[in-house]
Length: 387
Image (tube, rainbow, N blue to C red; front, top):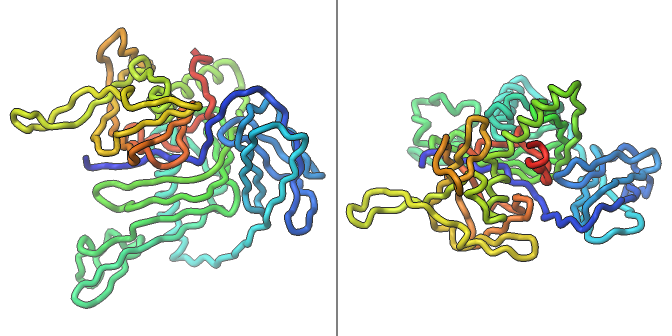
């Protein structure tokens, strides 16, 4: 397996729909106790969001409780609250940020352009969804590198990202350990347009890392953060139909779609088959046998616990029709197919009822692993409503 890339795994919580409630509250500066206007308050992973008024008040309607409420402001640290029961009114205090101003040289501008491309490719994606996604405030991003050093002939060399494809002083750079981790933070919430999917995305980036970006074996990317969607009103019915079609195509054969199928114990109906890599006992040649994951899944308290897969080499096969929709493997075998390796990194991995996970315990290589933030959909996206 030459390439290993993860999906982008976010901090999420399982949402149990106990009822639609209204949440009200007020935001304050934790130091001055003054009300905060123009702060953003939203339910993580959904389309429910609003802005505080001049007195710091906000109201969110039709919210499913329990949920995760996020309070965000460009000058303050983002705050996440677990809402388990309906309160009369929330009082939320935000801590001011420490803002550093950095000077930018011509050399650092050139380096920044390369860093920005690495970030966009691995955050938004390089497929059609990522290529059409637009990052509106890229100036908010801050980059830093972690390096590995190697000693050659008694001299320590550190290879900078901008010189990665060159040779320095006759030293072959392939023998030197390269910069191995790009870290990215943001000074304000990221604003991203997803025109193909009909959303404007607000992302409070907590942390982004890209390991081994120049490795021939591939790289691993992951990020932690909070986000919500503003729905773009289409110009006409035809545009809405195109958006609906794109949302379906982005959802099918995504990490969330596959993991929800695992949670529901219904992978065949949703077009998936799983195969395990092994060895033929007669000639020890590599072979692939269908693996039935239901035997390793226990659903309890709105979570699926998947156990005993951390040492297995598994491949997800997605069968689809000419529209790109899943082909039911219960009634039909085969069809057009694409495959993606999947890695269960822990002995027990936990999947939420909507197909999300709360850590980086499950990773995907391409094709599923190629789907990044550019193809992101709300956690409660329901394809049946668009069919």
